[in-house]
Amino acid sequence: MSGATESNKDAPASPRQARGLVRRIGDGIGVEERVLVPARRVGRLVRSFGHSVEGDERLPFPARRVGSLIRWLGDSVEWDDPASDREVIDPKEFRNACGQFMTGVNAVTAIDQESDLAALVVNSFTSVSLDPPLVLVCIDRDTNSYNVMATATRYAVHVLSADQESVSRRFTRSDLSGAEKLDGLAWSPGLGGVPLLSDYIARFECRIIAGYDGGDHVIYLGEVERMEMADTDQPALGYFRGSYYHYPE
Ligand SMILES: Cc1cc2nc3c(=O)[nH]c(=O)nc-3n(C[C@H](O)[C@H](O)[C@H](O)COP(=O)(O)O)c2cc1C
Image (cartoon, rainbow, N blue to C red; front, side):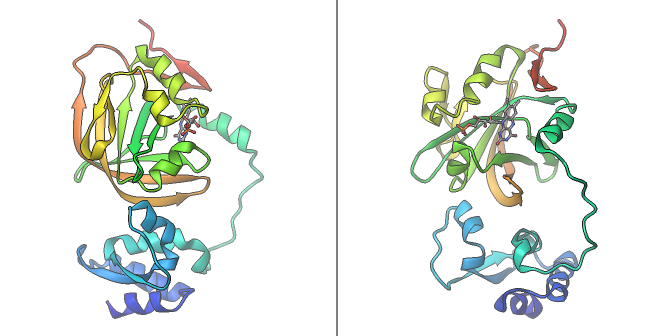
């Protein structure tokens, strides 16, 4: 483990140190082991786990997360990867191309340390791992919900049914606060006080175990702590080419 600790003493870490560290982790450093990481380098990430961070404090960080932490730090690790061959990609065209991928529509809710509520619609919900049960959602840094997610410790995902298009439309309104979006809907607090909608096809209550940089979004990996499936024949609400899609009756 000494290599891991060394590589975090001097910023920036050299590519060799970073790779060595990642390799060591890959070689099976115990998941409960912890390495000391300077707090100032992980401020945002640590805040997203609900800790407060002071000056030069060093924080014990789970070894199993350090590989992704180093990738997340990006700017302080100089990778000598080949230059990108990326063509000029227009964000709107990129969105259109991604819209060819048909998805479901999911309502995500969360509560932060100040009890502010997040409520938004995402199609970035994905199952990640069956054992342990892990899912992810990607949250736009420009949304109100991101401000809540940044200090939330849990979130809930509700897979919406075909008759919940109005809920989806309400949850995509940035002019309403999370509490206003929930006003009038049937909901109750779940694990950690996260608002749980009573209507859904499937519902997942998740503990946030990692937040990764995803460009203008943040990827929140969640461990599913509890789940429910509704006893309904209703198909899921779909989204395709920028419009809601209803499965033919
Ligand atoms: C079908 C659909 C899928 C969406 N997927 C996402 C998503 O994956 N992540 C995200 O951050 N926003 C997504 N959005 C946009 C948010 O729902 C929207 O920005 C919302 O207004 C955010 O609300 P807030 O600013 O109150 O948090 C999606 C919108 C629609 C209609």
